[in-house]
Image (cartoon, rainbow, N blue to C red; front, side, top):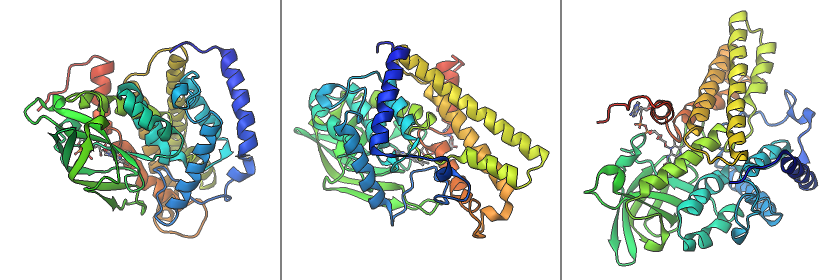
Length: 404
Ligand SMILES: Cc1cc2nc3c(=O)[nH]c(=O)nc-3n(C[C@H](O)[C@H](O)[C@H](O)COP(=O)(O)OP(=O)(O)OC[C@H]3O[C@@H](n4cnc5c(N)ncnc54)[C@H](O)[C@@H]3O)c2cc1C
């Protein structure tokens, strides 16, 4: 990656804003004002079963438009419709979009932030040709088929298996917590191909069309009331060897690449809807008569939010300077989700029962969805405990946690 000059960055921002002004409506201050707009503070992707197909269709239209105008994959190679610009510009452009009224883009987070980069860095030329353009142009929603009932934090003990059969593999097993699997066209599938090998070495990664016979997707209802993740049952699913991402037995390496992209993207607030919990919390604190103790906690939240911004700015500077991202995304994801937890706690203390029983007052009961989503954010992509161990061992060089 080459360094990017201030001049190039400014020129990009000017051009991108002109494009956005032409194709979307700027968010005005009044549209963000208290008591106006949707009374919701979504944190996880909003998969309301009644509206999600409509939301997905408008997200698809927006991605198509972006792609047609060269904004679909700014850092991608021209051969797959990319604009061959500096990688940091994908993030810069995402942030610019926050200033406009746009559909919820989280449906395409897995395609553009996880599976796309993984196929690009670890996939064969054939896979790149087959999938990259459609992962960025809105044709394909992707999902991640990693976790299993007995393999979450300890993902390397995944037991779903693939057995070679000529040019194909036959897959059997069960995945769980697969976000978007109910609307996805493709899945990134981690399976065990060598049960005799040490657990990290017996895994292989595939990309699988979700309409392949033998795949049964069953939505799971969350405590927020919506359905954004699923159980996925795999029963004699035939997957071509041409759909393998990376070498046989190297699935763990590929999974780590995807998880690093995921943590970086979540920490940088590049995957979730633009809920603006902090602005709303400040409003609540000022109008609900917060005492000195609560105001101190709000101040701590504001400072921690700034820490997340600074960590992201530092990550972006490294990228601008041409340094590839590593495991540091774990720190940002940790800091972000710890602060979201504080926000949920303080909003609950401010609102009391109005958070759990709908009084009809704008901006109060909506916090319950936020509070019920925070625990999910602390688990997805690696729990707090797993990320703390990762930071200790990989970034701080502390002694390794005892392993079973
Ligand atoms: C909103 C959401 C979306 C998700 N989306 C996806 C998806 O799209 N695809 C997918 O494959 N998965 C997905 N997941 C699953 C997620 O990756 C797992 O929930 C996560 O890895 C934790 O695994 P687990 O739930 O099995 O918990 P467990 O691994 O059973 O952990 C239980 C508790 O034990 C702690 N623990 C476990 N091991 C250790 C250890 N070694 N040291 C210290 N503490 C430990 C954990 O921190 C946790 O508190 C999603 C989860 C959520 C909540």
